[in-house]
Image (cartoon, rainbow, N blue to C red; front, side):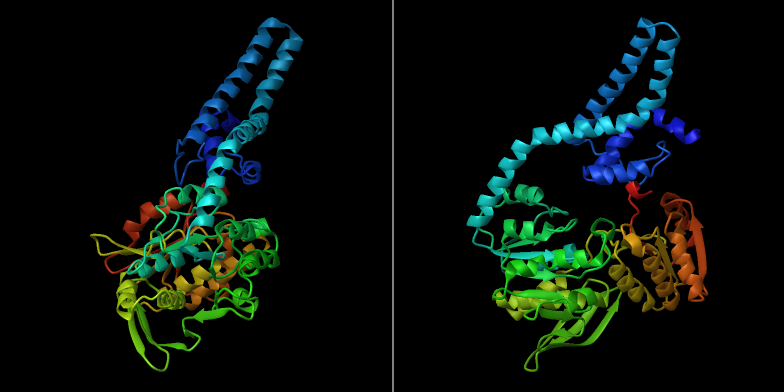
Length: 476
């Protein structure tokens, strides 16, 4: 009864618009959230509604529609003032909050139809720009690690070349088209993240961006709830290979089994051990960064990066190879690699006045990334370590298996404190911890806000706190 009444909250329309925005205006994802939600009182937990033009139109339109529906009921009651009129009124009062989200979707569909001509113009302009641009175009595909690869390339290649890439996660045809209109035309290199949500996405983006070389950063269960099977995920990501064919280079992450085992024969496989003739030695990683030596048998390079974790060595080797192919000097490459640093919300260290070190990895929501981070934590000496997580989303039928593995990894790494946020998946992490005979402490919180607010009272100087993934409100 209490949850039913929350549909009459004055913020009901705002909550629906917020969730539509959080679902990137995907009707399928919005309905999935709506059908599993019962309490609409506390929807905006992790973020707030961004009143963009589209969100504002939906908010005002939805509000007017809801007012019209209730006003019509009142008019009906007074115009047919009898038992039948009262019955229709009561039925309407009960049904409107449940019917309204579907009418709200109709508003979105109308808005999308009205947007189509403008979006078509933007995309056509983008298509013309990309087809005429002389820059080297690099396409980056994978379930994870795309943004980190993009930023490494951008940082190092900028030592000698003019490099441009779409901001944030502009990885759709429309988003990339908007970015293309900001170019001056004299860029040497263009970097594109290729987003995959459904089969055919990567090929569609390749046909649009026309990459000259490609990188597959890894393949795992990310978006498995959309793809339904890992085979479909593999086939979709390797659409970049179909585009490149035999004549253009493709770099593949050899530390990821699905990527390596499905790589075409002409692929260049990279890992923390090396790539081709280049071998890695003397690799170390601490909170101060990453150091390693690269040798091809004839010459050596000593490289330092401010990135944390051994899993960054392989991608840096790809950057090294592309930089050499583009004519950068070894001095420029060493300097560029030294400027690479943790990217926002991706194993980003934050030092506070109390001496506690927080590693913000809240944008890392995939199993391979989690394993790499736990491995990094496991090799940190002289610190008490906290691992804070709400778990991962979109793991599909492998949800239980993936989260049990996380618990086992944490136990094996002997992390002293595991802080779990109560939801539908974290009890699987606890199960994995118990299975692996975890000897540390498990701390539970009802939500992430309470956990974050409590951390200052749980930690002391020298502690390292890892914030792993951010559980979006649409998965609550």
